[in-house]
Image (cartoon, rainbow, N blue to C red; front, side):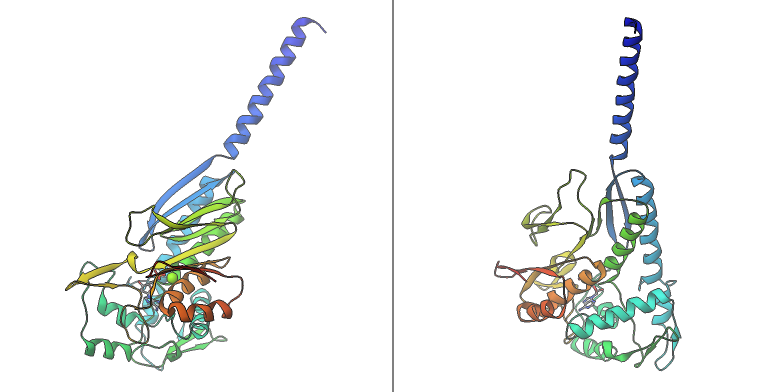
Length: 326
Ligand code: AMP
Ligand code: MG
């Protein structure tokens, strides 16, 4: 081999190495996409080939779920069900039926702390609007008369739902973000993504590990402190981590603070001594619903919830500053 041939071959090999390495690093590049849906900011971070397209598909799925299950839009499938009179069977999609059925099972296993029938009461408080207010006792008593998860009947064969009381309305706000995260993650996995973090306003779902091979680190926000001040860090992979806290949506009237998580027994913002409740499990819809239920159930109820469900990790920050794990 001549010296010239050796030099040419060396250059060729070097080029091939550079090409392969850059193709590898391109494939492992991390893409981040931020969007707004389900009344919250959504951030998806993913690496691997096709990450950008997978994120686009995931956002599309989240928007579809928002359009179908938003109780406050006039055109959603849920809004149509909400307008229905008592005693009438309403045919719904398989997907809405399954989500309502799941929600009712969770209600039964949390002693009714999680209850999707609270919309007549939460509408009175109007906390998710620009004009929240404290309703009168009479108003709350009247609205509570239109609630109760046991007042929903389901017919699985006909895929139909019936309200047993007049004026009943469902609000999936405490489970929909978790459900959307499950669906979006499934779509990303189907697109071949093996490493991603989906954050739907505090409903976090981790696919696999980070690109550097470490578990995803999730900071648990210290309530009423600047964003990013954490009281604890947890590490997850292939799992959801969902937090419910009074600090997320609240208002003050006559010096008293009122928040968005209601106690179904009283129709008032829950006064359990829990400041923040985080549930970690692979089922994000369940984690979402249970974070709300744990918040309402307080220190006594949380142990019962932990026993009633498998494969859960619950972290609770109490008003007195104690951090409890179950
Ligand atoms: P989350 O932020 O997941 O805890 O859900 C809170 C939202 O769910 C509220 O903004 C209400 O729309 C609704 N909600 C409030 N209290 C409850 C409850 N006890 N069970 C189910 N949904 C609730
Ligand atoms: Mg929730």
